[in-house]
Length: 68
Image 1 (cartoon, rainbow, N blue to C red):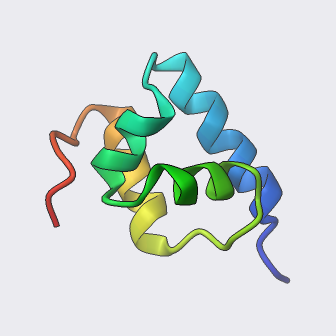
Image 2 (image 1 turned 90 degrees about the vertical axis):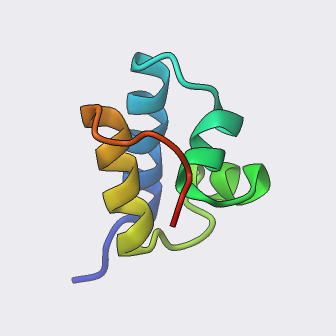
């Protein structure tokens, strides 16, 4: 079964908004461009495990910056 990237992106967007984080700020924290962040949120590109984990860290308060 393939992941539903549109659903994953929708959830990332909802969590970002709930946490009051701008798209640009989340992109910086995930170390991706704002354009790529938009594409992730709209399900136009796949979401890597690294990005999903980094987003989870940001939403649970364990993320500080976009460092690798």
